Image 1 (cartoon, rainbow, N blue to C red):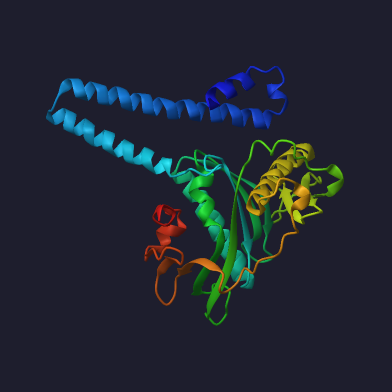
Image 2: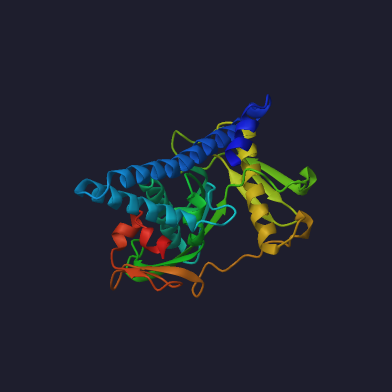
Length: 321
């Protein structure tokens, strides 16, 4: 049904008016066709094996089929309304000063590596650099099958314990960073619109660590939804119009999620956002480098001493648990 709907939309004369959205729909159509082909191919293989009867070769093929079925069973767990969507991942440094900003930068790299390991693509939409090192905040767009489904439970405070590289006395420091994961929602709820008069639009120069590549034009956009206080910044595109279009799509995703969480049908029913503490007592996962090495998820109890591998993007153990 979804394939038929998308094919109908693609044949519409105004389909390419919004090129960004059109490209996503073409990609989604390709993914859906690939998924249905997986099932039909699996059925064909089982039919052939049934005809061949038992042999060493069919046993090998059965092993491959069993592995594939387990993979499909895992995908069946992604039953949320947005689990198949691309993900918007926001990272904010919290308590811990320069160490926290460095920690936020390490987390950004960790999720980029995780995306690459799955064959997904990523793009930094917005980044605010720390005064000395690391980042104050960043927004990462991650595109791939079930990206949001895999990453949604990474939302929360991540705690790091290590000997600080920025301490003259080599003291052990605890740092915090907040990870927030949103689905990239292509279709805003029917009948619900963001009123332009409710938006505060600021333009600014794209930030960077300095040097010859500093932006000279105010192409970056910051949208603030005044009734709720939700703020979105995008500086990845070359033009102000492109950045505004991308920022609007992220704002729609954020407001859609807030509406679903609050179980309301109108934006006007949403309450302003309250700042949550990015500090001790709120962490979902701890990464300890000193006096021992351990990564532990406080929700599931799953842990590993392979902290270096985790920071290189090996998150499957935690995500699957």
